[in-house]
Length: 351
Ligand SMILES: NC(=O)C1=CN([C@@H]2O[C@H](COP(=O)(O)OP(=O)(O)OC[C@H]3O[C@@H](n4cnc5c(N)ncnc54)[C@H](O)[C@@H]3O)[C@@H](O)[C@H]2O)C=CC1
Ligand SMILES: O=C(O)C(=O)[C@H](O)COP(=O)(O)O
Image (cartoon, rainbow, N blue to C red; front, side, top):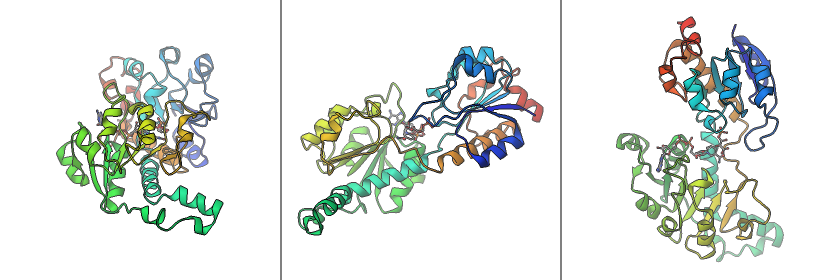
């Protein structure tokens, strides 16, 4: 039986399943990217990983030193959507170690938070509920507050970055009768048609949206793609949502636009500096203009079961040589000369 080290989030049900597949050792309890504590690093990690075939990794950093000192390691199963943040993928590829990952483990929570934010912005929910609690029923002035509510039905949602999260969101938004448009240079016309999404240029997508949401991944191409100029293209009645990454947009430009009524409002789940400092300018912007959530779009009770389901599904596919639906982060690993000595062993012995 293959020996596995498991540091990803603990789950009773999955412990049973892993134990049926591997000779399992549980080495640490870490509680995720948001609170990066309890990680195994360097020699501490080598000590427990050096005799293992498989590493079911949470957020523990894997670099060349680890790989060189763990010669039996044949495969990494990363619980993450973005394993590149803690694993040196190029090194894994060079040394012939396939990295399976749990891509899409939080698409539902990300898409659902986007819907929640839009619903809240549309009906000014936070302001109304706070006013009613603090000042009583009559303070929720009918003309001023209630008649400024809007419906999402027939409004336009513009998704910048139509990847896994963006596509899930497009389905939900279409489901309530929103008109969905998108800017993503890598999405084909056919893919967009199947999703009932109209593809546009970035300027057109910025100006078309009643809601513009940022869901691209950070790359040299996307970093800082939304600045003062792009925000100025938005309708003055529109809202900007960022549940992707803060680096996609110029945070100061968003705050300036809110202060100067260039746009109607915004909702932010990601920030330049996290945790968000109590003195941040974000807290000074009123609640009817800016909704704040603490980098929670990807977190739900269901995330852990999803991630292990995806990983074991990919592990089975990998062993059977199936590539459809395989969540393999580094497909170039098959070209590595080392592959036969590392990950290739699993593949070949099961063939
Ligand atoms: N706030 C949170 O808790 C969470 C945030 N995220 C973030 O959400 C974002 C989206 O995640 P996924 O959908 O899984 O990523 P993905 O990799 O599936 O999709 C990213 C999309 O961006 C597109 N893209 C690439 N270059 C672009 C460009 N120049 N302009 C527009 N689009 C471009 C790609 O073609 C792709 O379709 C990521 O930044 C991720 O880190 C993901 C999960 C939770
Ligand atoms: O929290 C985020 O932000 C995320 O992007 C999600 O947690 C997914 O990222 P990973 O931690 O799975 O890489």
